[in-house]
Image: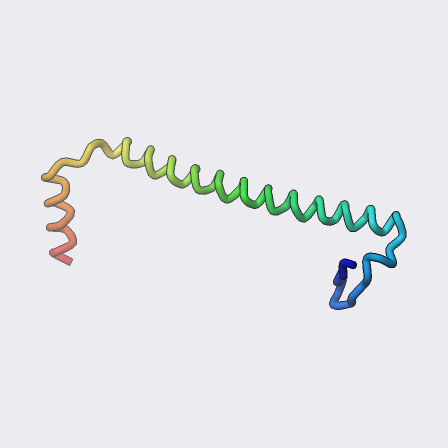
Length: 78
């Protein structure tokens, strides 16, 4: 006995017709699909951000000890 809420109104799934049960099943499938797609989106965005940073660092070249001291001197002067 599952209760379904639509616009804050409660419905008993035991009272559903086969067509209504099919609609609920389709809605559940859609909700599960949306969850999976959102997960894929977040993973893809994360990898995209990491790879963008990786490319940016590789284009800037390797850091030397002198670079680190230069950056510290820049921040100390502010």
